[in-house]
Length: 194
Image (cartoon, rainbow, N blue to C red; front, side):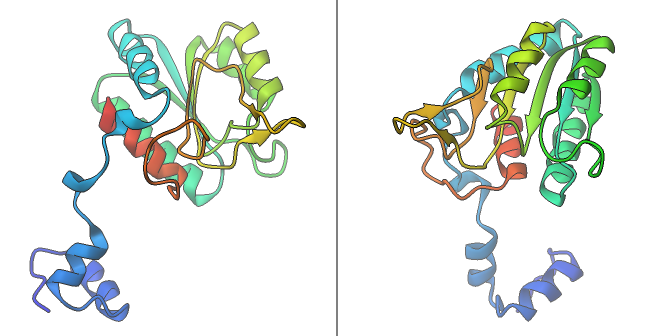
């Protein structure tokens, strides 16, 4: 395989996985032009509009991720992209031992006290109904980006937190065609839509 325009480490990894022709490389890596429209995701338009408003008005934005590799990479991606757009941004990764996974009320209070008005979760939040409710009581607008399963009520109804927008391809009402996305993939689609 001649992959001169690929990083040598990437080429070696692909070759080791038997992705050893340019056709297989293209099929494996895909093409950004082949991705579905990010606005097919439920609530994407509302999320982009609110995020654009926060950027225009120079609001303080927090990106709240998880401490696993998916959450950290999603946090880095979103923070980096928004910094390039001039955002006033605070990344927040909870402590694995004292805070555990997901949103927690003391962290939301701390971020609110730091002047955050818009909080975007990455790789968490889809089942954080009490925490999102608490965050709203503090004046936080919240956008959830997640890829975990949606909570289902006893009557098989979808239970979503009361956030301004919830971007998750696993929502039963989300027409986005690819449901197997990682948290960083969902964050990428938000950046792409923005």
